[in-house]
Length: 190
Length: 114
Image (tube, rainbow over all chains, first blue to last red; front, side):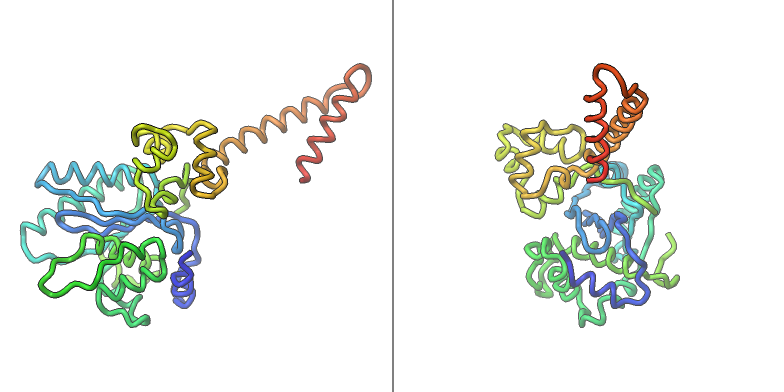
């Protein structure tokens, strides 16, 4: 399974010698989050997209329930997500609530939360000629055949992004972490 | 950063197959999805027949589907067998039942070496 991913990590000199550790990779958006549970860099245990609508306390509660159940079920060693810049202050507020909830739920279970920046993820995929989100998703769909059928077609500029793209973004973040982004500038302080 | 063994891999294999909880439940003969969901979340352990059904559906041995349960059962049984072996070893080698005790000890030794 995922021989491509294995090769990619082997080629990366910085890669940590892994391990069967579980990792929960998240792609948090104001209205939803994509999640992927890794067991080591080549095995995906679970993946999906959860909606977390509403605002304020409701938003925190729905996100908290979903994250909490994932943390209880898989007991990951760490949670990783990307810090994203959003365009509106309303979306930013929502994002802050969801991220805050994730950190609180993880802290309650003594799970380490790490943040990566987008450059670290793009740098990892650059050798594969993947510069766009869809190109990265296509590489990941090749590496992880379970995700192949979730890959959306390339969108036109006037179309909104497919819901399942959040899964691929989460996988990309997880892979970048597994690849050993020890560089401190890649890790964003929470 | 070491994580505990996972109770089961049912959810992973179901997701790989693309089956929904309801579809898997109906294959197993359940009327709703809650028993399968409970098995996946390790809230309940499936009966033997259902565990074998999972094995048939996913073509994965039960011990690989439920590594957490398998590890726990193995630990418990091995410690009970060790206690039994110690108890048998203390019995006298003479008198009634000595042959049976010897037979059991041989079996336990062979089993350990297998």
